[in-house]
Image (tube, rainbow, N blue to C red):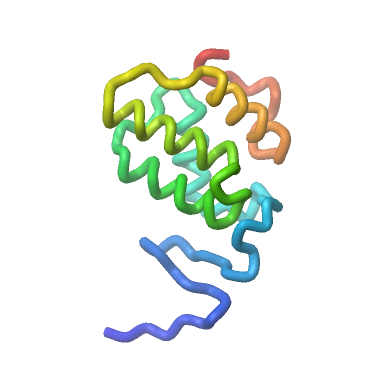
Amino acid sequence: MSQQQSQNDVSIDAIPVDIANTQSGEVVPDEVPEEIRSITRGLAGEQPPTNPLVVLKAARWWYIHGKGGTDPVFQWAIEWTRHLATDTPSDVEQFDEFLEYLIAIGFADEDESFRFS
């Protein structure tokens, strides 16, 4: 039952967490695990995820590997989870910041079509 993990690479929900790069603020799009990439792109798409646990999985990854609590993807994922849990409108300005951040870090192109844009 015990599985060896190096001190620099741990796993949560089978998604690796690189301890050396936690909260570096330097997210390299090619290094984002495919599952997190898919959830993140889904949050920007026409049919965003509706399972709060899935959204929180992405939020956790961006919190750890991005800018912590100030990471725009983390903040939007938390906002979207709040929207799902309370069925209240989400913050469109926060969504715009999330999209701008995805473009700024090279995670998406400006000409990609996102919802609300």
